[in-house]
Image 1: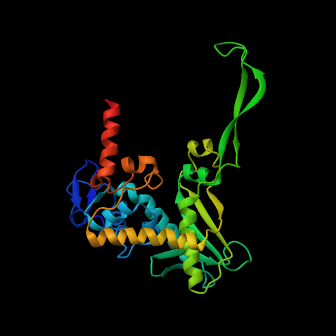
Image 2: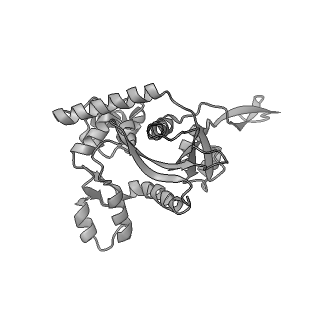
Length: 297
């Protein structure tokens, strides 16, 4: 089931319908149309698990489909940014480029963003648009910093006599694009099953904090980056999504909570603590939060 409550700025939880009908405070935290858009974005009316839902932890998806939970409207505004970008592009495909089409197979379904002659004169190019952070973009581009000798030494202080260094960016690091690559490759698989040839794949990543100093400090200097995505074996994709779909369906049928999210799915536990909308319903997340509290004492 979709989220049923909004979390007000003061922490009070209010049913979404009640919030939209009448605010419990003197003034709303956002314009009413914005809150309505947020509410609509939380319920896409799709019963079967989508590609993006299967990439997430099975337990997280299970809890979102079976429990009532609350979201802070502020925390999901970035998803509206992504929807707005998609809406802008819809009016500029001119019928020669396919976009925003949902395809499905016996395992799952997914809606790809753009397909066709989208980057050069070659047909059959699949593209997906992301509005994301400079941190995510820097990781996806393989950007990292190294210390480079300046040829000078410190002349005073505790470092006297030691060589001076400066930070320089390198762009040949490991590209952390696993979730994007898996998602886009399954869209490719769905397109190919429907009879369309996919020659290349790209992510167009739009940096939502590109005007901030933190972005420049991470080596992200542009607003938009085009990131190529390599092909993943069809057999691997079918086994990966098939297994996760099987685990989810079994948990839903038996009404039994599935295994905890993996370290990759939970971002090493960080998602459980700060970003999982159903964390309060998950024993794993509660245990991680308890351990953090105990360490802080």
